[in-house]
Image (cartoon, rainbow over all chains, first blue to last red; front, side, top):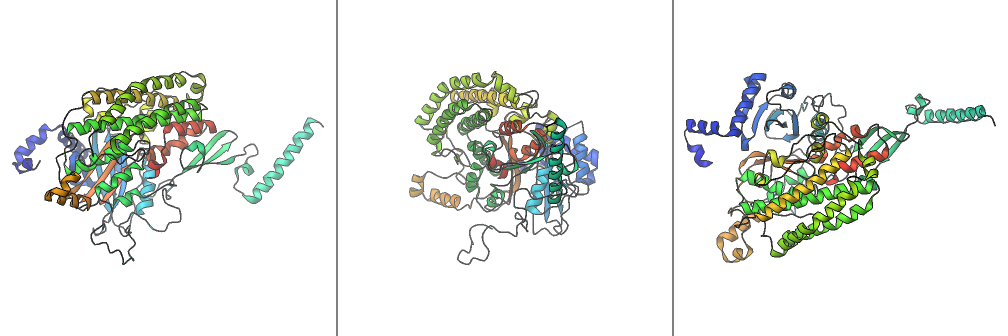
Length: 188
Length: 422
């Protein structure tokens, strides 16, 4: 792989044109741009072969709904979704990751949105996918992300009366007050 | 006593009961409708028929289920959080404890995810060995599910009969890795050791004896009138709904969608093997049972092919940065000692990036979404657990059916508490 990266951009392009996975990704990206406009997506990447784009929480619901209805690539299977926390990213500390899969054409797409932790509100996908119900409850349970319009947004795995969101990075696994176990080498 | 008097008496009793109900709970459904008296039934958390710790609060009208509210999380162990503090090789034992009926599939899925991140290519022999182990795990997983379904319909014999076979598979695991249930099998980069001659012999013996047992098991159930009456048209789901609910694995295939990760995105050399994907038609309990049975036969086919064509060669990748050196070399060789230390301390160099890898687990697409920031542990690790995703369809599948049908449906969905709650 390292050798390939050192080649000229033109050679890279021909290599991409021959690779079926890259071809599919290019086709999918073209479709996304056509349906929703090129300005809807930033940070277009292909880590380990899966097309990954970042969009905004204002657009995400329309994009998932539009892709579900689309007949060309039929990305209508929500594989999974999960929350994320990047405390050092000012103004976009929390994130949601959606993974779609076209079972007909075998193309996967990863969509990401980021938003401030002070305003953790994301539109619900339960009206598009029934499977989003528990996944969003899990994201709420872990990260405190709110989904207005969700039919039953309560904690799912942790106890009801828990008053914090345990997957956020400020909750280290090790007890921070212990001095006999300063963890310089192990763990974050 | 005249009939009318009796009726009047009954009405009086009901009226007074209603008054009482109204005092206790004005919202009680029986208060508002004379003829409708609903019972709240707690199915679980500890109920022998749920085969795990999860609760369903059912509203019953007589024997019919009006609504169901599942509560999960009774064995939630925060694996995604724990994984954020563990080096990659220490996460394998966590994956054991997700779907504990087929731990090796979880182990291999995790190893392959890390290998994808690190860019390690595993030699063909190790890939075939993994396929053999994964298919054994699939067989045991399906055997448990189907035989438990038999128990729930009142046929205990089949369960005891195939449990013996599961025991023999666990003996094969034991020869391969030393453990039985939570296997922690394989390593990042391959297998931890080659198959011993004893393991191969046990495997060959089992492959000879098991088909007869399986045939007898099928003979006992497949055309059994009582079993068919109990399972046909029970807990069915349409393909559209199943896809909308994110079903994968045998439950989706029973509804008629031929999605199998082994075929669509072959991993670990699955493209080398000749096997078929059984599909059902109406996604009911009987279809799920038949699909699982047929998958057992297909898994046997794969194991036989893999064993026949098992290539010679190394059983692990030549990746000293990630794969532990032999213990003897650690004592005699400086490089081996350094690598050993670095791997055990979790100081391997991982690239920054995010990777999603999925395998066909016992219950469906088992996915690992790993985000690495270059540190010694994952920055974020998300497990796509098939159980968690499809169990939310359970209330919809059982509403309107009887309680005994709900038990059978739950059993045939193969909900494993460890995977459900992670």
